[in-house]
Image 1: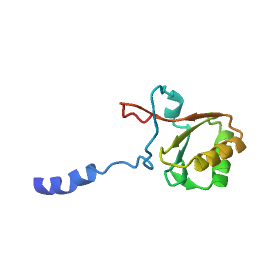
Image 2 (image 1 turned 45 degrees about the horizontal axis):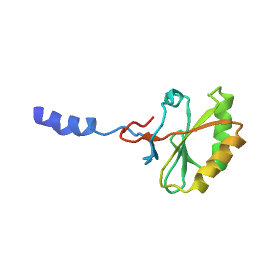
Image 3 (image 1 turned 45 degrees about the vertical axis):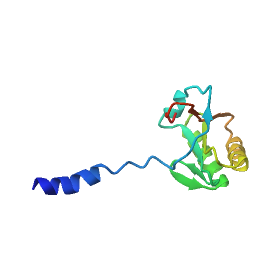
Length: 122
């Protein structure tokens, strides 16, 4: 009976939670902590290495991103957007995200980076 417990309980208990898309964040020498990015209602936009944009665990086009951001602002979300861009993505993809953020009426933008020598996400 104990064998059956280990057979079924351990593999299912070891399944990692979905942490969102993997992003190889750029490394900075003098990064600072951004506690606002850890809030549940933080506006974190992810730009993957291939240029795809993700927001709230959904892949979106830039037009859809603008609409979603406007909806979240109407729901009283903080008016600071955090961009989590992959270090390998092209600047054109990030520029499009910045334009969508600006079109949604958000003026404060911060880029999330990793500290050199540390492995923290935020």
